[in-house]
Length: 181
Image (cartoon, rainbow, N blue to C red; front, side, top):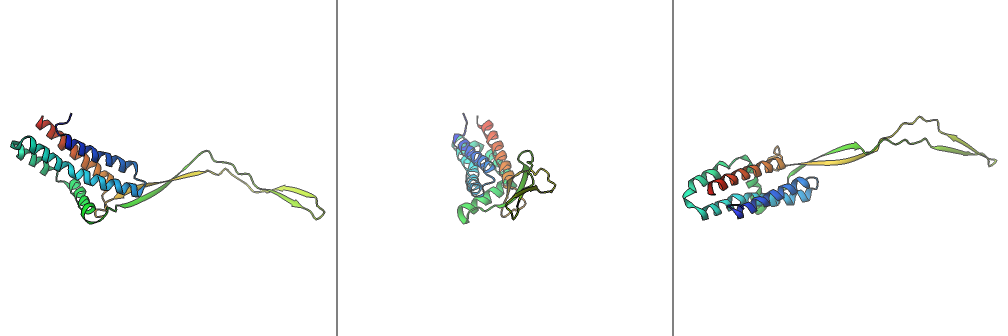
């Protein structure tokens, strides 16, 4: 069992929404809604941790504060700014890049030339097939793959940054768990 159950629950919530973002990356609106929920949950993890550690032992304030200050990196800043945007200003609207890829569905199929029928004026029928060369035609499926970038940081991939932020949160939570056992 976790030393910090509330923080762990909030961390797991952030992980859940990151997993949904990855799963739904090709469904723009679903991705945006889960992205919004992710930044809110992920931004709350540190607040929950500070509250729970303060309840346990105020003697470790310097260590705890140092741990939190060390986490103020690029990932946290981008996620936090996204939270401010979605909670106080406007919905998140990541830039989406869609690449459409095609691949053969199955073996190419052979389409035979058309059969041509001629009817003579006297009513007799004459059959002839076209003298057109033919070759098998491949059948393709098409799939779009979406990649999302931060609106204010268009060179930053949303899933990559959020994944790194979750890793950083996991590290700080693990260090705190060790310290407060």
